[in-house]
Length: 176
Image (cartoon, rainbow, N blue to C red; front, side, top):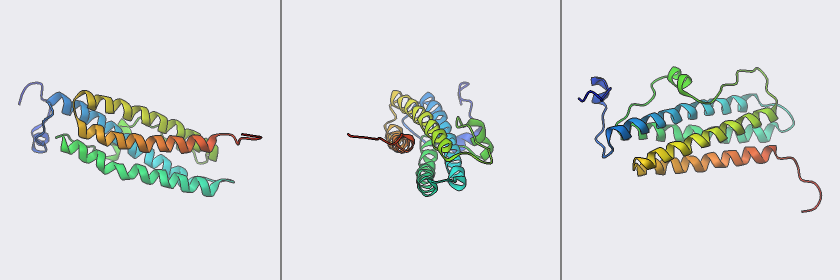
């Protein structure tokens, strides 16, 4: 084990042979784990809003938040397994998620429905920017499989941003 290798013997027992260099694994592992933390946090926040939405658009928002939360939780395993496929170590606990996530929690007992949509719109835009930056990093390291994973995550995030944005757009009046 070289001096630059900061992994413990337990970490090395989980190593996976890969064609990626040590620096690539370290960089991509960090990007994937940050994205994993953000995905869990955004999932939980979206579910929180799903559970607590109230008002005249209840049904539409309730269903949209549930659909979006489902999209988020469905990619968690893919992200974590990608970390392992490249020989990295994934997150182990909720405390790691809380410590690494760039998604701010919302612990308010009541949030207006439109404010929920606006907050999720901003969170998803930030999430999308983070995924694009991580994709660029993976591309720089020649990790085509991680780039491919990120392409799908980007597509889903763009769809969430689109739906949230259109939900907040004022109604058009008059002609075309």
